[in-house]
Image (cartoon, rainbow, N blue to C red; front, side, top):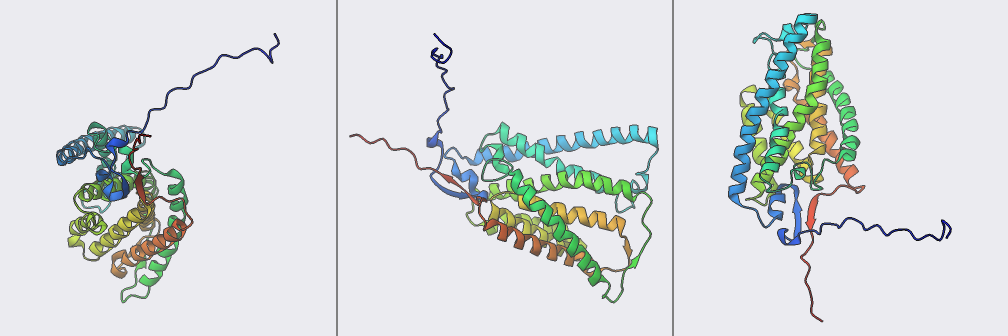
Length: 324
């Protein structure tokens, strides 16, 4: 018997686990209503997720701060302390690392809480597809940074026409260290912030309210309230929060909101260090936030119309067995 005619053993494929459609509610669900897409939804499960998520966030924040303290201590012993200029409390940059780490800690806390209490698979914190859509994130973050660079230049030009034009100052000798910290910490901090304010909180609110204005409006109001004493800073924060909520609702995930946040916070911090100005700037940087938000929304809306961006989750109807 030749090799061509020799019978080959039949290899049975691994059985495919069928979709449990009985646990799904038929219909189309936007991102903020995903919890309602399952029949086993209970208010007690939501409360447990909130409690566990908050406890995990406290633990993750403490661990990250301890690690940074240990690394900084070792680094200082070997190379000195180039970051010491913004450690004192009076320096405006002193709170950057703790606040960035506390925001970044929300990502592992929320994802782990969803795994401990499976009210919904943790991947649905990213998008209606149940995963982080990296191609979309890569498709949007580059243009967002480009739009941000242009709008930052325009806003700095607008500052020159104010009554008290800003004066260019000398770049701080340790600015390069701060820029490197911003490049490393801003993306993870923005990622944690968006998972909290554009995914977890809206989905909790969406379990009770259908309207996206409630689901995304309440987090925006909370952000504005946190910045209430900052004057124009409150307006800037509210504009960015509303824009991020709109992008999340329209794209069915946090990718576009992450791109907007990275572009704004990253370029604002880097620009403040490499092109420092003194005096009064126009509306505390609000024009930059408004122009950037408008530009990113316009680009994403145009790109979304090309297709390939799911705005909602569609659950199939349950199978009905018919007797013949």
